[in-house]
Image (tube, rainbow, N blue to C red):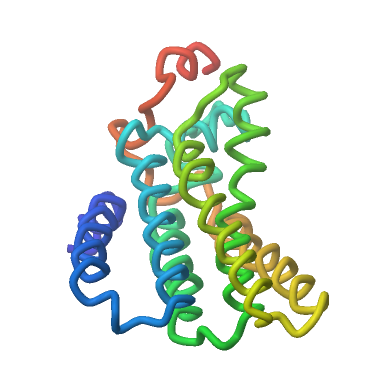
Length: 217
């Protein structure tokens, strides 16, 4: 079961998204407006992950081969299936879900939505430059979901006077940056090894731009 989840967590995330959609439609009135925005932000991250790893997929090869230029063990270094599972579920889910239950902590909500907006740096800039492309898996959700939701959250808390001062925004931005480091960068640094027992399956490794990426290898 554990190994199944290790290689299918993003499909499970899609099921969670569907379940949350029904909850939002039928029981969303139980949430405050801020909680609704933050729940939508979490759901956008689930879509972002499905776009990266399920359809069109291929983010592992983009991370290891395109970004890190790994030639020796591109199916497992520095990004491997175990680290990817832990980072994107246990750590990311917690980071996104906790603010929903603490809507009065505006800085925490800001950190949550800004983390999604920061994805534009990797997907809208770095990967596109490396791939010489205008798209890569993850960019769609970032542009059409995470940025609009993030902007709306920032607008809502500002208009309704829920931000104590500029310091709240600063803490939110720093929290998002810290979150990116703790959720994604630190696990890679700690768990990277070419001897890992948890490589990506080839079906996970490649997806979008498969021919172009294999040519780089």
